[in-house]
Length: 175
Image 1 (cartoon, rainbow, N blue to C red):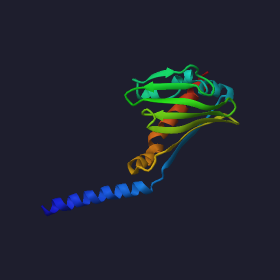
Image 2 (cartoon, helix red, strand yellow):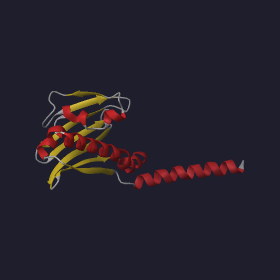
Image 3 (spheres, one colour):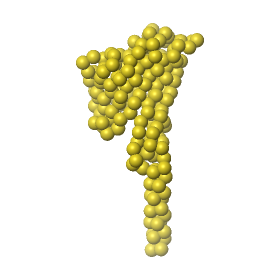
Image 4 (spheres, rainbow, N blue to C red):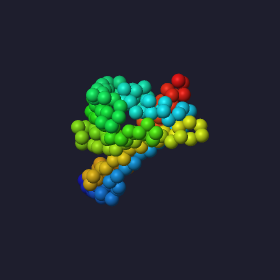
């Protein structure tokens, strides 16, 4: 019986430690990946700046084939909007800033607005073509468990960004 109390005491201590550390973890997170694509900015923007083209290069449907995407009234420019449903969850994305010379910024909501992030795909002309940087920033609030997820965001989302950028590169360089 004594060993059972020690195990329970240790488990309680671990839970308290987990929560205590969660309170001091950063509330904000940032994920960023980049790739150089052998294509001009105009060709990159043709795929990135049009939500109708996102299925050609984003990795989401590859990870969850049940995703059904609905494009809003228009697929380009400020206010372009898409929503989706699938086994992996529901969400929506809206372009809030679009410039063919430097890229797009968007708002991304998951789980009916429970999780909100800001994302961007930025372009920069470089010697070998165009550097595309995909980033996402979010706020996890004061919940210590969600702050642990914030710490893991780079690990969870970064590989998806890498796959998406690699696919974008493949599509554009094959053209």
